[in-house]
Image 1 (cartoon, rainbow, N blue to C red):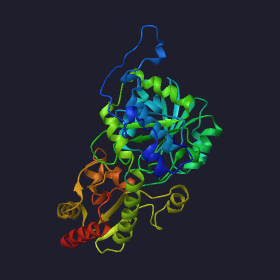
Image 2: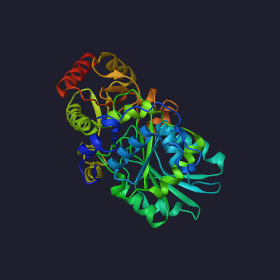
Image 3: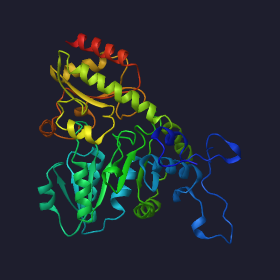
Image 4: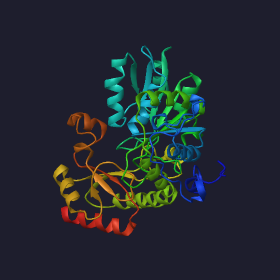
Length: 385
């Protein structure tokens, strides 16, 4: 038996593990349905869409233990998790406060889908409590934010948001994908629901898509009801792969945190690099807040090269270790140009207002040797300098 007082390292390995017939590893139950006696209560029916199959239960228990929550729900994607968390309590006429600068998929959900359902929305500054109060309505039900924004890694007044939500009886929801639980546990800051894209750090191997919502059981009952109706279910084999990936989370994040911190410092000293964005650097606008909240600053950093888009593109062609690919959080390092990927749908003027230039490169730092990553970036910089 595990205890939630155990360290994250231990919980990542042992929490949620089931050992039928003495199996050391929780088996894959590749079955959509399970035997159901004629005289059994309907609540005991096991079915994949109900999120109560053995593999789903095992993974949900492991994630809830890591986040120190009472319950969890796994979904088919990170966006399915966010949708379930946000929509489970909202009705026509309700109002949502949301941090500005959200991930593009979430932004589209809020901007395009909520109004069609008669739900009002205001985007707010991450730090301006006076603005939050001014925009608060009797119909406000949810305050939504992210632990770190993509790609510029802003850190909101997270404790302030959770306190404000509690004071005004709002449901506080946070997307903590960029800060897995060994780096930051949102419930410690007072949040009600925590969302993750399991595609990223928690699985950590770039081979599945999944999501999770975690929180108190009473709230999670509403999330589960929504999920059962909309059916964005995680299949048993994906559950098994994520369960396996989570076991090495703490080890992976120790290396990733260290690599990213060292690379951020090194890049900030290189000619040809106009700026580096990483919350672990003292020059980052939210460094002090990040230091107070996080046990590690994560594996995402951004750097801007002198010379514009052409130089940045050539740099990405010259590197040998990082792959040019979207997404993040795997064991391999990845590079992407936000202006041509995550934020391509915005006008150039809108991107510049956000601080996203054509030569801004986002790096998802992997677990490779720091020295090899540094030397590879150095040769690419030299080639375009």
